[in-house]
Length: 354
Image (cartoon, rainbow, N blue to C red; front, side, top):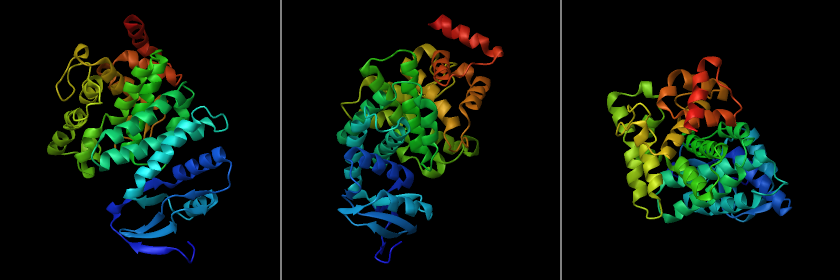
């Protein structure tokens, strides 16, 4: 820190937290596109020293080189903070940036995916910590339209996984993973109609929005550590999510069904309604595959982050009958994974359903 740094006392709830590496990456992209050495930061930035104690490292409209932020990171600052009232401004800047880079060949695919993940997490932070309104939904739609373009081929699958496991909130990373991997499944199945891709990507991003009012002490637990009462609370999130989104006229009925049905399973033993396969919306069955896959490959309460291969083997061993094999096999193809010979019937089922 410099001797000019100002230390302030303020409630943690007054600030929004950003992954420092993702922030650095977005600034590097901005610099590459603008071809300038430093950009003015249109908001104050802070580092958290301890609960309710922050140090201001950047004053509004100050020019600061990206290297300075990297220096803070190397000294142990994993996150950068800004005031809640500036967060929407930052989101707007990042949405513009993601749109600009989608076809920019100067920006590597890895950087595009990091920015895409970062922007998705910013949107989710807004959705989970504030009232959901039309503006927030429009932000999600803008990001989704860019995402469906950047995720146009399966080469993004492994690079995205790396980005998702870099110092992030597991709830947001999980939702971004479900959204993006669902898009890749749809692409693999040649479901390339923009309206379909948009519905799938938005539904993936919002599928767990019903968790916004569930205590983090429950969300951060593995299911096997939850009490019976905590499981009951946890399992309210599909219906709660549908109810939250149904208040917005712009949300299509299909997305409401997906959000409500993403924990139903093909054997009829899912929740909240115990629907059989034929009663579950096809896109909800697709999202369910990405949801289970993300549960294993993204670091969180249920996993420390498996490799895709180990995740698929776990799913085949424990969850194969619960999931729609059409979508499961499509996701395996995205990663170039072939099921072991004992699961040859899986491929036959997939071909029959085609």
